[in-house]
Image 1 (cartoon, rainbow, N blue to C red):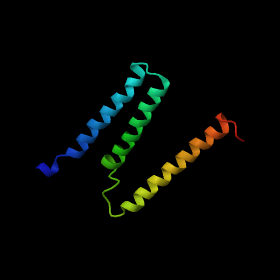
Image 2 (cartoon, rainbow, N blue to C red; image 1 turned 30 degrees about the horizontal axis):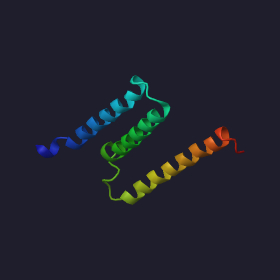
Image 3 (tube, rainbow, N blue to C red; image 1 turned 30 degrees about the vertical axis):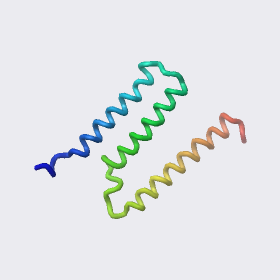
Image 4 (cartoon, one colour; image 1 turned 90 degrees about the horizontal axis):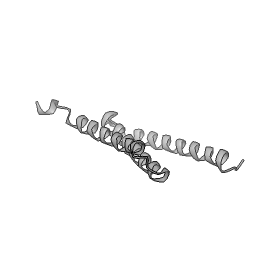
Length: 94
């Protein structure tokens, strides 16, 4: 019976709810921009890790290398897009 209980998923859900509550503190406590941005970035990053590992089972298959390579490539494309947009639209480099 113990094998059938979804312990890992329940722990992941509790951590996800805790991180969501931590992110909501930015709004309710009216934190400064720097502190609020830091809290939101950290909680979003941790939330993504929990979602990938617990609920999407990213590390449980036979081809872990392929899954993680795809995740790293997606992060790289996202960062290039974000910093390219900042470089062009905000910082004025054309």
